[in-house]
Every structure is written in structure tokens, then in C-alpha cells.
Length: 385
Image (tube, rainbow, N blue to C red; front, side, top):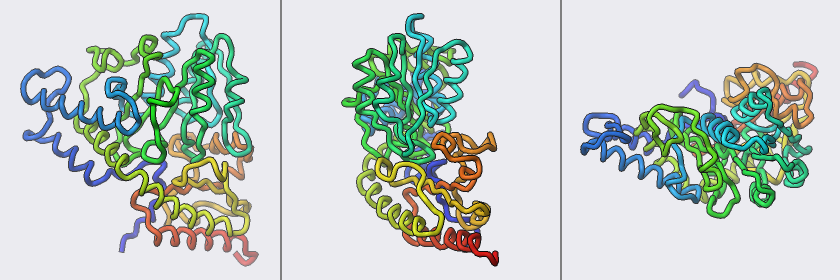
């Protein structure tokens, strides 16, 4: 019997699907697609290039865009940096205002903060009590000099959904551009960039059963002529991101996104059932309540406050692998900026836990999680300790 805890941290990262691993391995050896896909004109290079472009088509199919509008990056963090810095560098001096929210991933928060220190005007939107940024807030924040709005589609800590469709239409009518971090959304909810009024969208492979170290940025027509490269040295990816392409990682992302498209409907329904089981079991415990909207959310992620002063997630660390803070925030060792933005104090944020479910979560694991947390909660609530 394994001594490892049960994994409930899919929002931090997912295991690579075995079928994705097999596709990646085929790119590594002398008999595979190991050659340089960008600059080699011989047969090995052409074969690698074909594999890269097939992966680009697979990613494009999942998110509803043309393959040519996707730029390979090292992950969503780089995609966010390229989208925000690259767009603002290409904007005229009359457009120096950016809108974002306090709920964003650190890859957006830190990037925007750096630009703000350099003189960019920034409006920081505060979430409502459900952990949502409402379209009306964005509309009211738009100014004549607004260049870009940057918001995430699915919050990585809460699992809440932003109404990107409504926000996108309002931003486009205004004349500004919209960037969306969709790292937590792929394979969990439908994305159709042929319909959404979105100009830039960031993707990551490792949140969707693909490898770490690879991602993509969707660049729509309105953003293409404005976006400035952040990595130079060869003009790869139509001049937007230089560097030798990592064929095995790109192929892995393509395979992972293809699988996500095939499995999304059935997988979301199954995870929805497990999530209801977990949520009902935990909310029945004393002092436990949900952080974030109860309705406008994906089922994959639950964030719960255990409102008992002595509760500690260390009590369950041996049996459950989950997050007491998001992976993007753990290096700071402070309270979650997302939970603080919701109005929780430091003590409440410290007593909150995130459980995220995924492809390999079972009914038995969900029941084991309920039992482990119930034991920790009731023990903490007992005067006998």
C-alpha cells in the first residue's frame, strides 16, 4: 500500500497522461522527431516541423482559433508577460492605462506592478463577496486612454468563472484590447475564440495533463501588429518568440489538448458528481464554508474556510495532498492575496484549504478526503483535543 497522500492538488499541476508521455518519447530518440523544427531543411527537420504544426492545430482546435494565431511559449507565465508587456510596449503614448484585478495570478499581478512602477496607469478592480469581477466594474473603469484589460477566465484558487463573453464585448466596443489568462480553463470549460471578443489568451500544458515548460499565447488580429517580442534571437514564431522549439514538449501539449477535447464533456460531468459529493460532505461539518461563488464556478476546484481557530492543514497533510495557498503564491509564504481580496483576515486565510479534483480522482478518494477532514475538524472542535 502506498504511503503517499491522496492527490487533491490538480489546480497546482496535473500528472502527464500516459498517452501524452508516449507521444513525447517518440520525439526524443534518434529514430524520432528530435531534429530542429525551425531551421533544419533536411528530412529530419521537416518531420519535426510537421509534428510541431500538428500540435499547433490540436491546440487551436480545442480553443477555437486558427493555428497561425498561436505562439509557442514556455508556459502561461511567459504568455502573460508577452501579452501584457508586449502589448503595452506597442501602444501609443495616448493609451497608457491598464485594467486588471486583485484576484489575478502572480504572473499577471507582478507583471502589471512592474509596469505601474515604470509609469503605467493601472486600475486594480476589487472582487465582490463571491470572488467575482463583474462586467459593470470593468465598464465603469474604462477610460479614454485604456489600452488593455487583463483578467483570468477561471480563478486558480477559487475555481470561480469570469464572464469573459460580456466583458469582451464591452471592451471591444470601447476600443481597448482584452487579454485572458486561461491556464485553469482548458479542458474544463468550452473556449471558442472564434466567438469570444478576446485579443490575447494565455495557455499552459501542465494544467491539462501535459508537460511543464510549454505553453502558448493566442494573438488575435487586433493585437498582432501591436505586440512586441520579449525574447529576441532568430525571429522564430513569426518574430514574436525566438528560440529553438522544444518539439517533444510541443507535441506533448498538442496531444494533451487533443485528449482534453475528446474527454471534456464526460470528464466534467464525472468530476461534477465527485465535486458535489465532496462539497456536501465537507460543508456539513461545523465551521466549514465555501470561499467564492457557489454557482458561477467550475466543479474541479473547491476552496473552503474551516472557521475554527485551532484548525491547521498540517493535520491532514499526511493523508491528503492539497493546497493551503496557491502554488503561484507559496514562495511568498504569506496569506493568499485572493482570499485577502475576498475580505478574509490573515487567520481565516491560513485556515482555508483548496481541494482540486482531476482525471484520476475516484469516489473512494473523495470519501477518504471527507473522512480525513471530518476527523481533523471534529478533533479541533473538541474540548478534549
